[in-house]
Amino acid sequence: MRKIAVAGIAIVALAVASEIGARYAGVIDFPLYEANNRVGYLPLPNQSGSFMGKIDFYTNDLSMGVARVFENTETDILLIGDNLVRGGNAYKQADKLGPQLQFALDAYGAGTKVWPNSAGSWTIVNEANWLEDHPAVVSAAETMIFVLNSEDFGQPASWRNPFTHPRERPISALAYFAKKYILPPQAPPIEADLTAPSKPAGEALAAALAACSCRAEIWLHPMKSEMRIHPDQTALEINFAKIEDLLPEGADVHRIREIPGWKQNLYRDQIHPNSEGMKIFGSEIAKRLALRTR
Image 1 (cartoon, rainbow, N blue to C red):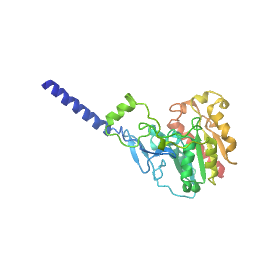
Image 2: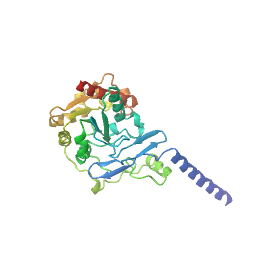
Image 3: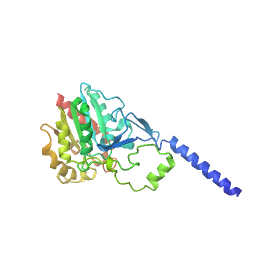
Image 4: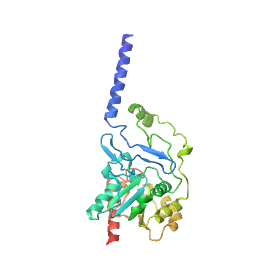
């Protein structure tokens, strides 16, 4: 009995120590989200943290991926997208596309403020709904930039998974880690009152751009696998061709694969650029914007 008691105490002590260690390591220091039936989900406003103790993040008062409070400045850029813009937990804040674009524009002395707004797995419809709900932000913009990939043309994303888009801190870091990485449960059905409304992607994008009396820029970002085939055969180009005629006159379309030196080694995975890719991408956007203002 004594051995059993000692073993039990040791197990409890190990569990407590592991829980403390996991929390100290920042396992559950990740961005939190809110959910609704307009945009599906978006990061909570006014939060900051350091995932795993080394990957910093923050959002402002409008859930944008910057620390500064949103304000209407002389030259504002809205940078809209999914996780290509948000970056997720794999990037330090400075390595994400918004900050990289800001750094590059500052080097040109542009005096421009970049306001990135996004969430992982958002589609065009999610993004357009957010813009529709924030007319003051849209009216403040001198430039609106959409970053699109082949998965952005479908139905809007809705909240359903507390592991991909957590809405609260878990009680136990160990239990959370085990459920997410070792024994992940099946995602529950989407709740009816959290289902984002559907609409054709082309109409949504066209309406979002038409509502802004600003310069419109579209950047098409291919998957890593799409870099191996002719552009016309990619899902990205096929999907975009279906909606391109709906865009307002004067909207500029750019293709990332046409950036000199853009290759598969600039991808972190099948979708996202690595840190070097983000830097090159941000620099290229800034260069194109600078050329237009000359």
